[in-house]
Length: 505
Image (cartoon, rainbow, N blue to C red; front, side, top):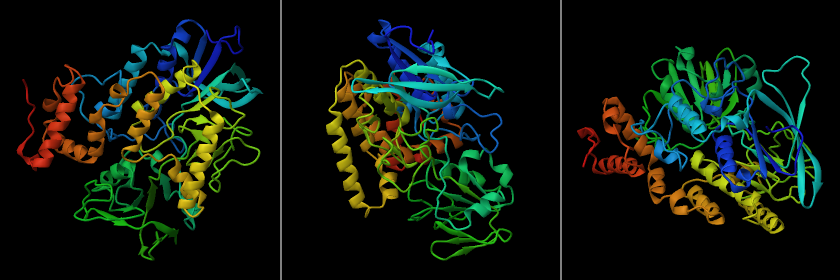
């Protein structure tokens, strides 16, 4: 039983959140010798009634949903690459499973590693404050209340040595701040964020602009086709030729009109939207911003970090240790470990900040570094790391002409191979095998993920998906790799239309 106040000299570790990041953090922590020898105590606080994070549906989302999960969501990555490395999806699982399948996978993960006893559900973390500071450690007081709130309930305070922030990156919608009359349109309900989107029928016979070029925008815009009267997709840069967008995602040019970014919202009744090239769109009924999310740590405040995102700064204010610009948290080494002297090594970790990444195995390797640091197996020259990350930020600011907003947006970006190189780097700091945690085939498959997903959709349209994946995975991960390689080989041969077969020995 994890008591609010220490009853021994054991190290007390609190994980904030029980989505995928929080679950793998729990699993990795309780697997250590230190926990097994009762030298550590571990707990996770979860606001919702069950595990799953963004994969757990919100039955009554309203204007402030607890998840951006829309009804038709399927993964945008094949499950063999997105699974935790020691816990594959069941054999025969569709290559790109529905959200409900991912949720079941996480529930199976919890059962398989007996994580439920460590999670305090329906518990809202209202604040986390440093309690004592010193060169050898720091203590934290965590204030919690029941969720949903109970009238006149008093705060419960829990004291811990280490905080692991695992509340995800999809809780605070990001909107562009440079669009004139944005508040007017939002005030009358003509602007929303993809976080509140669930299904297309509420946009029937409406002219809709979807803003963005990420996975949500690429899912939502074609889903509106045939229901909305007209669908635009607004992106910063366009190189559309033959119906292919800049991200390589197939689109119907006649059904979806690609347009420039929005500069100004005009007359609300007439639905006037002015683009940044001066073009005017009229009769627009609604704009959906699929523009991502801000980093959100509402339970933290000064002196640890600014309470609300500050988009104008790349460095912390003088009275704060960290800066949250909404797009980056700084200074952190390895994108997860704070370097200010006030936060000694092992007192505070943040998981899953970089993007775009394959999140489950990425955070899994971060958790191995967390446990290695807490157990004393890995030491760091934090002063040197602090100098290094500041030098990196100075170089990035020079590259972006001292535009703090652009530097912040790029700080945690890990396009292409960078996320795999990072995972290898972290694995090499710990005692895990890089070849097991980051097998070569993952780089190959990730580089062609859009082609693979397009091909899989064709397989589904032909009704071949269940036959193609039947019993695949029973013999191990290599069977999934062979299947994906066969699909990619057929793409290369231009044989997608011949019908898909599953070879057997």
